[in-house]
Length: 515
Ligand code: NAD
Image (cartoon, rainbow, N blue to C red):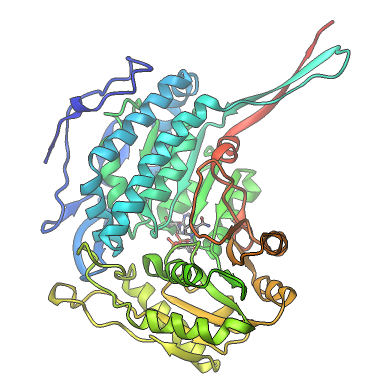
């Protein structure tokens, strides 16, 4: 497939940021094996020791390609490239950096259909979701942080009758590491690299080894978008190998990580004593709190979506549905009757609403949680098993039925452990205080939804829930300027808007005598 780079231009703010050269994209999608490569400096290359990992399509169980199994030596090489680029990139004018980000956003938009197919094939998510959410959002992340860095400012402190003035100088940190998970591959990859690059850092980024394809596609457009070689390096491979090498590297000064809580704890144990800056976006066990005075139909439709979108594999998905006594039976019966009609389909078909879970091991983990819940005495209302393959192509794919339990106490494993799959529990509450007690009876604290027509009550409940994000009468509405992140075992730090640009810059107070 040939790509005509001349069709993509910067937004005109800086004519010097033109596309560098025509690139031939080395990928084919569907039907043929992919060979992924690392981007280090100006080169696309395999791992130094020549080792590879298989790339598997979750909907079919088929090996679709291979990716470099990179190690410490590859990170060291990426670090050298990034460190060499940093003195130039860190002083490159903001409008020039922003233009590079906009160029990359434009390339994503131009290739959105190919990227959506690749994301769906790689992850098992419905192609409609990749087209409507994942790929547009990846483009928006880059475009948003291009604008945000142009508006970013820092503080000054001027006392009355001043003899001194203080101002905060925010400097790029240096070479930083960005590590992302498999559930929203290009969406979360760009959510991290965009603010890091906008702020003037050089980046070593690692996508999940389970869903590396769209990050690899992106790596072929980085130089073309105008980024100098070494500003963005993308290395592929296993978390405990290449990911660990990024975290352990003594000169990589900050780590932005999104993934599981256990991995986040391990990263914190490694990077903490090295005094690295860390942003950790981790797991969730999010409550949906439904009061009797809610808009029943809207709450029902949205709760089904918030529970099962992307097969329940979004960190913000609701997994504990708390329902006020007066509507418990009515809500349960309406929900279960709709969920029973949700049949996983071939992710590549445009009318599929629910696809495959991401891997065989993740499928088995989900089934393990379902079995454990039954052993703990939870009542299975629907689902609970592998789903039938939707067609011959998907005969060996990883499909799990959407599953609903009730009668599991708040301390049961199914209400405590993150399943990260299409599995929810229903619990009953009698009062606002009991709703809050149940909502907070988890170690996690990422997000919640609150359903009521009484905004005073919504505000009280939002204030009482231990979570970084609360949605009232809606779900997954995201304004990229807002702080994003969790409390308790759901993470440390905030991403989004100014929070991300503050994370990726080092503040220095400068005190100037006026006398
Ligand atoms: P994971 O923790 O297994 O892996 C995440 C990334 O970390 C991958 O790139 C992986 O290769 C890498 N990694 C693994 N071990 C590492 C190590 N020792 N050092 C450095 N890197 C390492 O998570 P996952 O299974 O890919 O993703 C699912 C998890 O991510 C869920 O728990 C989900 O809730 C969480 N998540 C959180 C958010 C959020 O914003 N809070 C968003 C999406 C997903």
